[in-house]
Image (cartoon, rainbow, N blue to C red; front, side, top):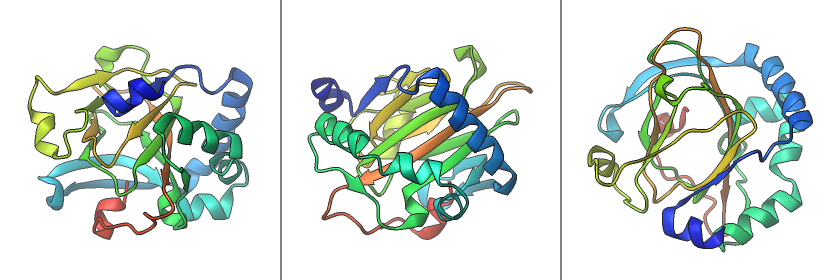
Amino acid sequence: MRERFTADGYLPLPGLIPPDALAVLSDEVRRLARLAVRRDFAMECMDGSPRHMTTLGGKVITEESTLIPQLYENEELLALLGAIADLDAVPVRDPLERHVINMLHEPGDTHGAHTDDYPLALVLFVQAPADPADGGLLEFASHAHHLSALRRTEALRRAHHTPGDGYLLRSDTTPHRVTPLRRAGLRRTVLNCAYTTPDRQRAVTPSAARLY
């Protein structure tokens, strides 16, 4: 797992969430979704990359949920992520940055090209289109650093995931995005958890870029 993650900057974790735990997490996300906010804008600092999605940020999650913060800080999970990434993985101190729920649920919804301030992103799938042709795919360019790599077909990779899956991404050096949903009736709901190292606790991206 460490070798694959080191080589690709990405590691799929199929079936990471057992069915009984997925049911509990799904209920929690559904309860919190009433507090989510619609985002429709383009990030000028990221080449006009679009954000068409509904989100719930880390501060509200911390205030309204016990389950998700406990999952986020689980010591066994932290040890696993640190072993895979060969990093001293620790939680992000800033409650806004720790975890976010991202929901794509309208045709054309997308999470445009970006890299993250912190080195590790663990993404957990609550809902996802069953057919890769329906969109909602992760697109990334391994260790490319610059967003322009996502425009080079030879560098671009795609990954399809199903509910209960997870993936780990070296998200500060791996440009990535989510492809648009292609039709009505589709949903892609994920819990995105950011982790860092003890010496990297300060976000450097302009605050507007972090509204995802």
